Length: 403
Ligand code: OVV
Image (cartoon, rainbow, N blue to C red; front, side):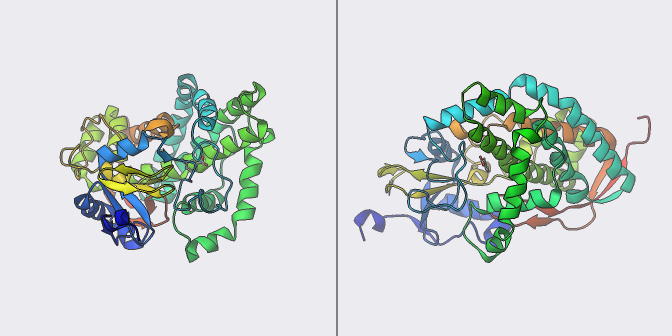
């Protein structure tokens, strides 16, 4: 054992176990008291939990690499089952090429063109929910929104809910440890991957969506056509479950905080701010990974080469050093250092699209719904890699007609 190892600040907490994930914020607070960087014995990884260090890690891609893989598996030491993402799991200079292509596809004009379609779908879903009165909000209202608007924007047919949710489980589950749950899911991997692959093929895409824009970059020679297909796949990997879970958690925060619901209902123009606050307060993406490229000292600890670092952005979002009353959901909060989408060169490339989805969805709710109340306990969907709900029973009533 080397001397540096002896001086490591250690913890036996396991961020992947169900108990931790059921109530992560209490455990984040506990981790924050231990120090800026802590060695987790169970998984033999580092963890960072404060806003300041997380920002440092995420903006230092030379020392904190993405090529080591987006999850617990260390690509520098072992092979992953899945072909690495050509945007998430690469460093510069390779990363710049694929990132540019995605950024170009997601330009301001493309986003502007999406709004009307998003609004129509949101209005239909909220009207149908109001018609029912009592809903299972995850299945009836939340899931169908991204499952409809996202493929519309990419230029593909509506996504099959069951297959997409298995696919999402496979993608995000791969970021956590190997479990029996995951092995069970992987039995469907071939079938589901084949289905996804077909949908990412150029022949399956409309000529006017994000997918077509990616293939146009291949025609222009910026990427190969095989890479174009993988980038369209990245849209589906990163863009569906994440927004379903974040919208669901935001809806729960509103239902459980009647004062905040009241504020939004009285001023629907706060819809975007409400979703922004939920992205801080409780959202789908709680953690990321980086892998060290060399040995160096960081925040008083000696890191070795090719060590995994778990980056708890969900903890940074509750760090009292940067937020007043971090545990309070306050849709009028001014958010000047959002970390919920990550930051740096790998910061969420479609974050403006996610914000647009959230804004349009919650604006439709604020404009049409008068009362929004839980009718029973909500349930967490404890899949690794993402935080979200499997159940959110709600009762809704409409504004009196012609309001
Ligand atoms: C950010 C993210 C999550 C999951 C998958 C991917 C990216 C990808 O590029 O495949």
